[in-house]
Length: 622
Image 1 (cartoon, one colour):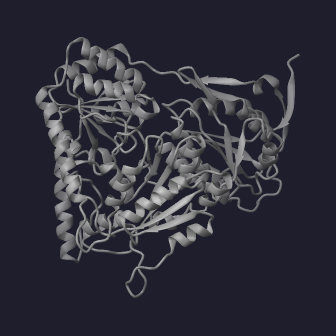
Image 2: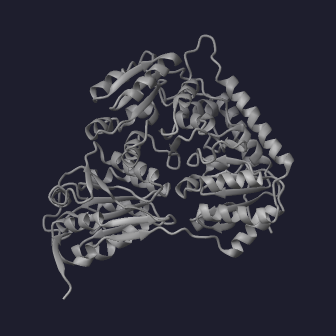
Image 3: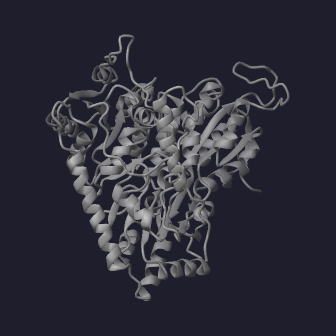
């Protein structure tokens, strides 16, 4: 007779997760080594006791300060682990669980695995309607947790403890499949969490999920090789998939052996290091070097990218009349975008196969195209250096401050940044040649996720040197600063660089450039002056060491002191509010007013509309 173990559903979830491992290329690690949780009714008497009873068996517990933040921490952990490991998140019913929704969307949009365990109402409904329950007039079984369905790569509602026997293995399968991954949500009714079932003992035996690398199909590879043979101006776009596949050596070999210039998306930042043909960020937030080459390229090889509008210039960037695309991606949907020749494959294997096939034929990009790429990069470097020069009467700029951070960073440092001017500037000017890793989240463009994401990075990379977080004052005020308390509580060293510029200056610049107005985006009082906020004092109240820098010299000193500190550090740098870096020269489609009483707004809207003439619908050509 097969042995059975009688435990509650909550205990079953915890026991199962402690036994799950992932493996790729012979490297084995825990698939879900930890869980974040905030307890309330719904999980305090179910999953909560299960975590306490199973403490020390491989699933560590961590206490965040907000539910949304813990999902961002799991995202940071998963990205730093190249999607081979993630963290779980448990929340109470009602707002505790719906606070996970923004994080769920961020994970699924960016194809990053997180395991969400939101608590749900009573499945037996005896006390209905319960506090925080949604009473729908036509769907009696609907709860607020149904909001997770469109935001999850996989969703299941657990109404009986035995349903875990199929739900948990499917959850793990999707979490560790790079083509399907995202937020995986198991909605756990609070009564079911505490109900017992006789589970087969084998269900809790250690299991290793092998993350295989998919090789390219012969026919798809042949089509891609033929496209290269007949092109004259190829350009490679490196996306986040290059990092997750650990394909940096293969990318460098293709670029160097075949002479192909490489541009990077935000998620792909730093994919090609120390190579003269690395032309920097692509698209709206990228470099003029990369964008000028993209306009003339007749073949685009996109590797591991979703090709969002920031990258494609809202489909206006690629202007060669006969441009063709190759989509190298583990996700078939992404491989087919822009009418591409699909190369559905792991990035490492796909790049290696392309390089070997083309090198065997003696193919190499034309000398003129390589020289053009070098010239464009040199021109951009010169223009960038000129743009970063101090100007009389101005305080230090954000770009100048980032250059100082870049110069002091080491190969064992990490940089975490998301939406806003920090992302724009870092994508344009950050030099990753020394090897430090940039984690940039722009796919969902979620502000306030940076600090918790950095916590996840530190948990995944405890031996890293500095984990830098770069945010603006708008992000600081928006939320997640409570996780600085978590950093101190958990002994997780972070260094947060806060740029004080008096508002949401990235979107403010877009507003002024497209409408000629300034409305609702700066932190100004009734008298029109900027509000005075002591961010350093606030950081100290949260247990951080804090510094205030108004000059580049003070910033250098603060960064050096922060590196010596063992706890969380916040550096507040006051920068020129309206001086942004030189633009990328790439158009971006946004909604502009077709009708306005203001002449300036009408003129700017008409000017913006001219860019729509550049937009193209790309289809596959023979």
